[in-house]
Length: 122
Image (cartoon, rainbow, N blue to C red):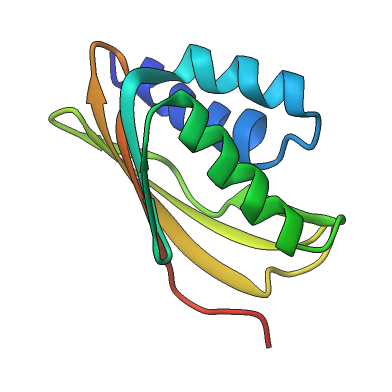
């Protein structure tokens, strides 16, 4: 079960936060999140598939087109809670920002995602 939950978190990073195609991103959100999931990130808290999709889209619009999120260490799962440490920056370069995702799983999907930003662009 922990391997499956780890894959969900990795897929969220790749298929949601790194996905620039709106239709593909929406499909991934519908697969990975519960209908009533919440997304809690820098000065933003939203609930539901539509709101999560809009929030991720808004975040992507303020990032340079070549920015990607990369996993910086193994995903850790503890009693239905997951942690993924990530970096963000231009593809192929060192991250200019780091942070972590904390996920509370419900029914084998993301029920709540808390995004923590450690450092911002320099």
